[in-house]
Image (cartoon, rainbow, N blue to C red; front, top):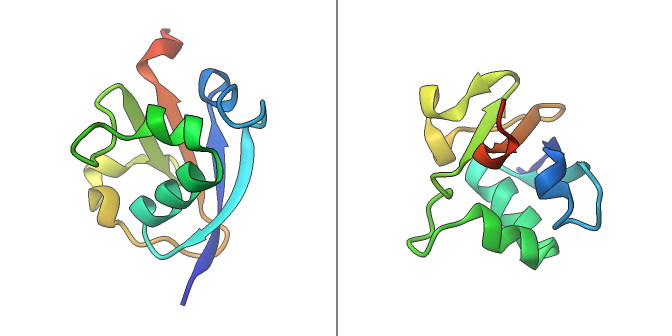
Length: 93
């Protein structure tokens, strides 16, 4: 069963998604929802994924505030209402 996840993109990434930082995408895992978002916005997909099909090392994803590296990475299950924030190291800080 697919769920709907609220994806929030950092502004530098939103620029590759018609300037929109908020998206609602279906999928069962973090990887599935990000892949679906990349299908909807191909330019963003090119930014998110490396040539091996892994999340680009310059990206970080947080599911409900927890780094997905500390969970199950791209296989982390998602649930209705979850929030996935994606940021780029280009954001600085």
